[in-house]
Length: 138
Image 1: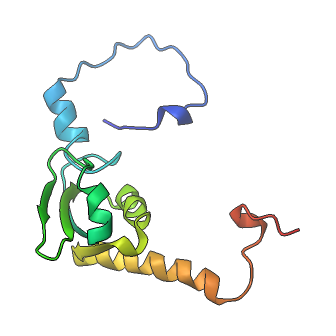
Image 2: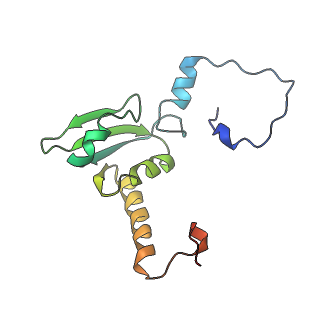
């Protein structure tokens, strides 16, 4: 079983094969148990700690049906979500910039750190990115 982005379908063709019937419980187990479009059985749980400033908004979001949350004494907000593949999760974490810290697992924390270091390196060189990054060099 796979999930995919419907908006990425470029062509279709009719098939004479019968579709498989899949129960809702099976769909939930295979596609809904881990974070985002990369379903499957969760292999890890991300522990994200949001700043007190950002917590006001993140606390109202549902990232996953089985997420666990708690308010920390200093006003920060902790969110734990199961995942099996970090690709979509990394994008969602990075959009919060300095307002989120990955407390665990270590592999996810290192992946975020590496991506942030790569982003910063683009600004340290003193050169502009150029046309490859949606920037008009003229």
